[in-house]
Image (cartoon, rainbow, N blue to C red; front, side, top):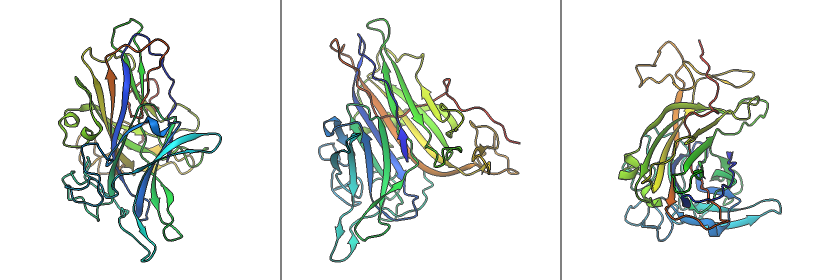
Length: 365
């Protein structure tokens, strides 16, 4: 699912500058087809803007293929990095892919379609839940030095010609960060994060609804891409920022489906990096048959969850569905003051918590 990521480049005037964008995420294959790869399309970025890839060479993890933690972190090994241009837009694709044997008509590795009920960073060889050929998810990540104007995630599935892969939909919002220098030189900046609900297939209707939970922390030292995995102390120390929020686009409200955090709250004076973790779940409740608006049981900040006795009502529809995936995202802040005329570099991250762009509160009977 293409996710628009509109961000303004903010001049770096006497404040901390950003030197890296980091993001690791679990993603479930729920396409209905076995996938033989995964693609991250970063529109507006050149290959020189890519600093790191999960599973890539030189990042502290083995870059082999398969499921052995001694030789690999995910089944597809090191991804390829490819620039493209169609005359109107340009960008870079990060492609994880299985190898096809034309003699046997088979792939070496694939990600089966299915569901996965254990939240967290478990879709890689170090995840702790027996990552194997039967696991219907994988873990990917990219570091950049600039912000993509648009990010698209796709499973690569074989739906027709053997050996030919097509792009399948992924309902996992991509994070975007913005660093706003303080008006007083030397003061901490504002670090704003934003996510956008998946776009609607029918522009006249509401889009697909998803639930999200958010955890955050500030760190006194920079964070590396290989640290953005479950079990790492830096990720584990993140505390709940948003318990639950429903995201859904609304054709009558351009700001609906956006969640932002950080406005009005400067980072701490000793912060060298900010980390946010986002967990996404399918909305499984009732939709309005005409508008496709989610008719949540309680409100768009409280799903009807059997595991939450405070809000669970067994007489009503359970509207918290399967786990879709998670994003671990971070922004590293450099202490040096940028040179005059330079810009703060922005990042593909993720963010939320109530600002003026929350969806309307609606209570269903």
